[in-house]
Image (tube, rainbow, N blue to C red; front, side, top):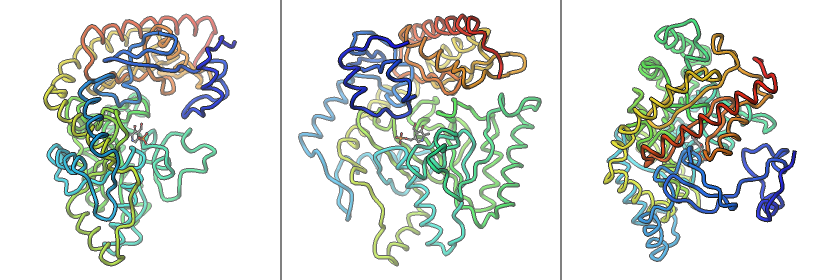
Length: 461
Ligand code: PLP
């Protein structure tokens, strides 16, 4: 049934192609056009208020309308609205941000390469891994291991690394040479096994994959510490500790995708620090600038920098870069965001709020529709199931998760359905009463979803 649309909604539908949207349903659903925000609150053009429970796309860690960020942007735009990084040129904000990142990095970092997005950062990682192996005289060592349910972006290589069907279907992806190993989600993929047995099995499967393909053909493995867009999948403890020695043994680089996890989200500066991961290279974006401007960063170790320099000497240049990579606006905002995170102890704030977040999540676990709740710091997932005992899911075609997110929106909570998991990732500045209100709204939506499921007679797939 179509809803009456406002003028701005009609203009949107006439002019905009929306990413990651059910294009065939948008006219019936009516797009939601946001007009302004303050703190954790966002308002649409009809004046309806929402609590932004997803920090936009896991990125506005500082919430909306942060005056210090606006001033920093203004200052940079007045001073120098654009310059690039090509041919050895640069800008002071780009230098300052790289220095801050090197200080904060969880492992020793030699250089920071800038992009405009997380996808470009991950594409760059793969190009660097290939370039590096060519420099090292190992032209066969090029395959990349990723994981089922991973999300690494949507550019051609990043989408290939992603392990979710919608990113591949009818886009003629993934590329050859991308191997997807198992997903470390114990609840879904390890029933009947203890977490320890599950981890041991995943490590064994990875080893078998490497043996089958040949370690000398594999350049790198890419992994998010906590898988975000795959459904907020928190690895069991000991997972990275079990797989890292296998990668080391075969000289396979470990690329840490911190695009969602980084900058305090998990209760440490980096997700890898919360989950026992020790990477070689790191991708960052999103909360790097609290999303006040687009920016991505690739952090590489000294041994890779040396190889890149040697190869550049052979070829004549290092032939990779983006027009907007290291944009001075993004870099100035990155510097300011990190200054605020440090001054306001954002990591401490996330740790302070996590017990309440976990308490409210745990209470949801008793709801008849909820199979599992999980979190790492202030990112969480609520997985809806048709049968709690057997863990059987609803038929994806019934769209139970998406319908729950519609009810959430109706009750003033912006949350994201990932299949039938409802993801939560509020701005890291969220206060106690705001977090409680967010969960109250989610609870109302879950009850509406249960009524709807019962009315429609929906059952396990
Ligand atoms: N990596 C991860 C873990 C992400 O969650 C995302 C986006 O959600 C990306 C990469 C891609 O980033 P972008 O959308 O900025 O290209």
